[in-house]
Length: 204
Image 1 (cartoon, one colour):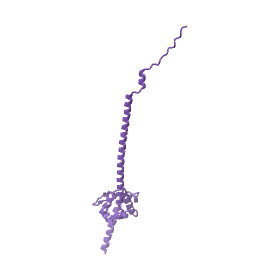
Image 2 (image 1 turned 120 degrees about the vertical axis):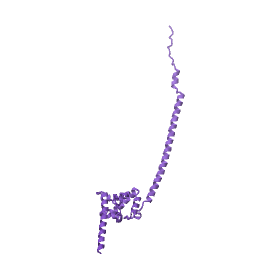
Image 3 (image 1 turned 180 degrees about the vertical axis):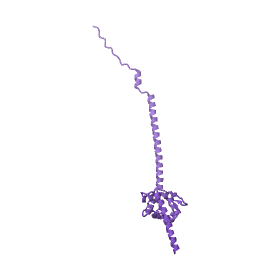
Image 4 (image 1 turned 45 degrees about the horizontal axis):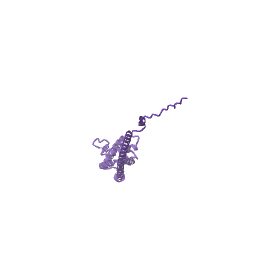
């Protein structure tokens, strides 16, 4: 009986290329690592620049806040007391100019609107306006500066305050028309009064 030959065994064939694919290329890995490091460095530098810019802006804002606080405090210290600095009724163009020149803020404007409104609130405007402007001063003005008179509108800040106070007194009326009529009535009444006084003087 013939001996049986051992079964044929297929050995495992290992290709060199397989090892090459399984092992990372050290050159490629190193290059990738460098790129990542460079990107991280750039990000870090950009973050530092942003932090520096934020710090600079923060300092500027602090300086601006300090200056604003100083300006606010200074403005509060220089707000005039209307009972001490401005006397009503105004008796001269110089006093009117002075008032017009100091109404430089919304706060001051509101303050004088309330003040003038309190002076004209009671009675007809043709009488109460004389609590704001003396009769002699009213004769110097009309609204537009016509007929040789000075223009009350030329004193923009004072006129705006006076007009707003008039609007508050009579919300349903046109303040411009109301002021024009009141000023004319003051003049007419004064002329009539002076005329009567002259007649009485002649009779005596």
